[in-house]
Image (cartoon, rainbow, N blue to C red; front, side):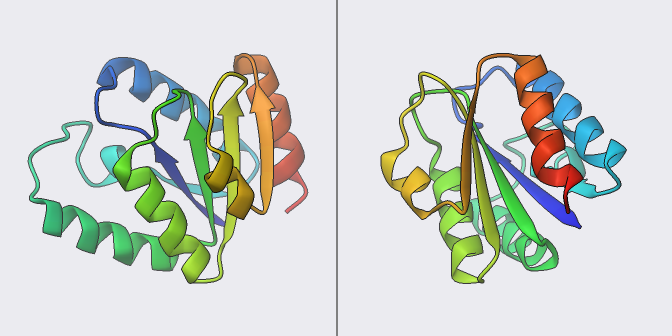
Length: 136
């Protein structure tokens, strides 16, 4: 299975985000799946060098190749791209899983998700990802 990992980028510390996404990717790949992370796989961890049209076109191509989208919410604010990606994947009929820190909002996003879980720290996030993607 190919898992498209979505996250809030705008206003985020890229190095902290990189550490989180690398952990998530390792969990996914340890379970025998492939992960796609835009900032890693397209931008080589250097956001801001592509035009918005290029970002959205490439994201659309990659979403079509993916089986599921995993949305990682760690901030009360939602990123514009994260919301677009989520809606697009649902429109394609793909599964939407939301992993949310306990204090994050996201009422409507969670409302369209196929599965939602909350996590407090790395260990809990790993356990829940193992449960969800280990069954696939």
